[in-house]
Length: 498
Image 1 (cartoon, rainbow, N blue to C red):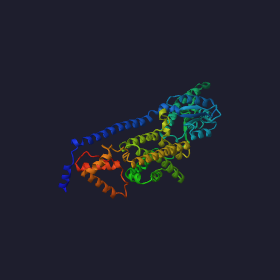
Image 2 (tube, rainbow, N blue to C red):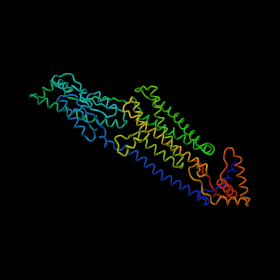
Image 3 (cartoon, rainbow, N blue to C red):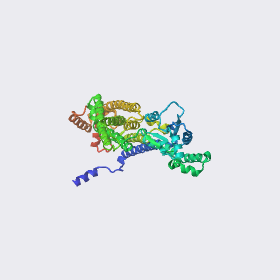
Image 4 (cartoon, helix red, strand yellow):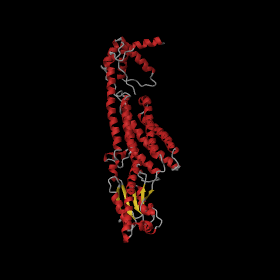
């Protein structure tokens, strides 16, 4: 056995033999093409990812907070002036004052506006704050500093952006506690000839040290500690597993379908399998989320099917996109399209379009962003409800890519059947001489006659699975057989699907 193996190896050519120069050059050209394409893909993908998350504090003024003072006392007015001035800091959200407006005339109306997404948050000076503080400072009455101001927040927007904006607002309010305490102490000392010792003795110590603080009221909590991480990973898992596996499966079995089955049936079968496989993956991904939902969220059956539908719609938009790529792009470049698409969607999931450079507002049209938006609305019990927009965008992506894949599948099937395209999405090699001349040679050449007989016998044996070959196919196989007869190592190489 070893001797036979050695004999076979002696008949093969070494890698750098002159006869294989054309093969080596073709291989080197393919590697060079891959190098250029993937260099471009990597730079575009990484620059897009870093750009989407670069220095979002520059755009923090795009986040708005509602401000309203519900107390008419002079103390509350002084605090209001300090808060408004504090939010003029370039690192603080934009504060819109509605103290003298008929809009947002109640705490409930302000909370409802934040819950609906009309504002990122709100700062409220509570009614009765001034009177309670004055009693605590002059009479030593009980006092809770956090009853002075309410900071209304929500978590239904993008996770990291919400944390950044809320932290900026809390930083402004915390920084004002010391200056306001000093201001109140100076006013009491200078009032009616009072002295510092008398003020300290009669005042509530807690009110004197911290005359105001704030309480946070989160009107739209996530109810899901790990939502940002589990949901992002799950969306990526559905995209990769739900989209790539059907694509690779079709690459290995599509040729007999293209040559023997009606193209409308092929398109319908392909769409059916893609949908069934995506549903199979997404229902498992939904089960994973529910298995790790944690103690803060108590999902219902309705939540399960809603989350499954979100995952399925997101996965289908990628499945049909990859169908388009697989029927249009050469297999060696498919990974470049997958890589770029994945990074753009990761940028949308991790950083989001809000508080970004205007160029990156295109992330509003990315499936991951809209899927994440729908999931956050679901997890916050309907807060920041943009479902109509998000569903429309993802449905349009799925529909557009499905129509594109339908056209490209039909085009590829027709060209493969006509012999104008091989399964690797490339045209067949050009014939070195006309087929008629080859047939004429075959009539007078024993070599050509035996090659033709060999081909016809093999074609007859496989008639049940392969249609009659075209004239170009016969000529190509005749040349291949003749090359084998003459030990020509530069014979045509059939390009197969990769």
